Amino acid sequence: MKNIKKEISIVMGSQSDWKTLIKCEEIFLKFDIPFEKKIISAHRTPQRLYKYATNLSESSIKVVIAGAGGAAHLPGMISSLTYLPVLGVPIETKTLSGIDSLLSIVQMPAGIPLPTLAIGDAGAVNAALAAISILGLTDKNIKKRLISFRKNQTESISETPS
Ligand code: RP5
Figure (cartoon, rainbow, N blue to C red):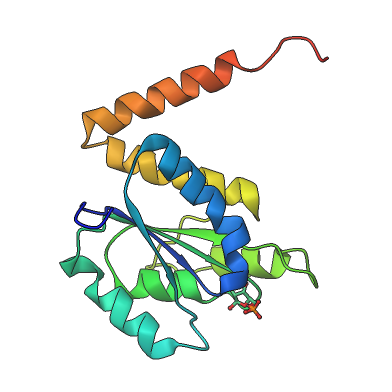
């Protein structure tokens, strides 16, 4: 994937978030869409966060997926530092089951948007599909792959339980 233009970025607050955000990777691999992935902590690596988010507009990235848990400031901070769409994924936590992450990410002040997905794996999968849908607005090929994915998914649902 070295010289391929990457249009999606997956950013996470910690290595421990990867077990959730790997669900995004699985979707992008299935769709053959190049992406980059980074660990950037709003609290532990604030300078890395500022540098990465402010440089996004100079890169080929079009959509950012940001996942964090607990006091999950990462997605909102990235959104505040870029004009690109940022999709927030609340990571499930041991102490509060991810309700803490969800509320930290979703309750943004008016003016800085942060579309927020479900807590955990479903949120990660849907963030990837939402990012693909955004790219599909201007890329017919990606749109075709998304339509086919949805069709296959519908066809795979049995009418009767086994
Ligand atoms: C957040 O703190 C991360 O997004 C992670 O979900 C949470 C816990 O991080 P670790 O202590 O597992 O590194 O910044």
